[in-house]
Image (tube, rainbow, N blue to C red; front, side, top):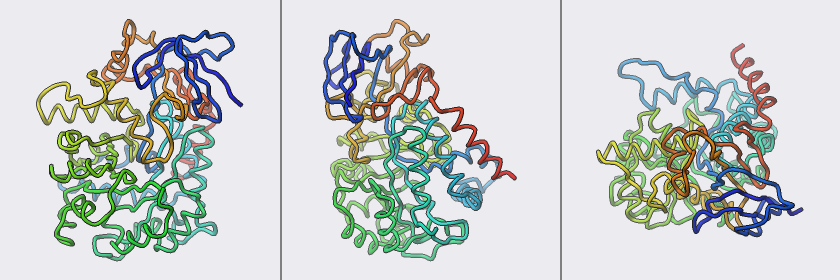
Length: 443
């Protein structure tokens, strides 16, 4: 059934417009009219911009934020954090996974996201055995997204090995491990909208070849790549090539692919990845938290590369904060201001609009713009918020991103309002279930 929303003002692809009527059917925008009469429409006061899609998530890790922040000289690197993560997930049940994911999705909605790519590799029970329904934990994420009213791209992950060259998995990885055949069955059972190879260290070239030959050629593909220098060194030792270099030479890179992190790239790799049309999913808060390093943005963006953002381990759940991390990291590297590189000369607006628009290829969903044919995913900013008062046009987004990010009033996902007055509409019930799950884990 169609409905009409009347937006006070909205950032359309061609610029800002006032009194914008959106006709929405089945969660999709089917008509737009600027300068419209509000009579008979649902009024949406404030400044509407496209909602962000979170391109990379391990939802269960939200519940361990803050649990691996001890300073122990010489040992606190990514690999030590990973061991802490293995210990944390030893006891998680599907019900607890669902409760954690629902809480996360509600928080992400409050932070300006309208949907997510769930990079899902927590497949097995705590003993490493498949559940009676091998897609049990995938279904848990679907139920969580439905509870939160949040757009979900379920992206099951093939994870078979502990290191390059097909090394046997470690005990701590037992909940992740699938053979190629079991993984293909999981894709079918979970009705996945995308799929992933965890990383080049977790799958073999033969597995990449066999999965690509077997799956729907329209499904988006995700992979972690070159997140840490240790990974780059190990890939060189195994193949004589760096991870992104190997993928460009040996995998059919295209707009179908999303490389997550891609932190450690040479200029040639970065420009090659951009020319291939692949999306870079950057997770600046997690990359900063883990001390990974910083993305080679100049070479990638200079070659026309497309980037979006994710929050990975979810040490923050705010889209504007991820973009601030990205922009400030570039400024610190270059020791200059206003790096830009987006679709507007206003840096904040350019960052937001570029990252939002990047959501379509990695998700298979038409999202990231307020336009006909796109999902009605909106962030509505309170223009009476102190730091937005008196701002017009793209200065609204600049002020939102670079003055804190408390101005979010509403968020719509698939044509449904899931955040109102800055708060998820089902937060109380979702939070109560989350607290019960954490109490069980702490018992």
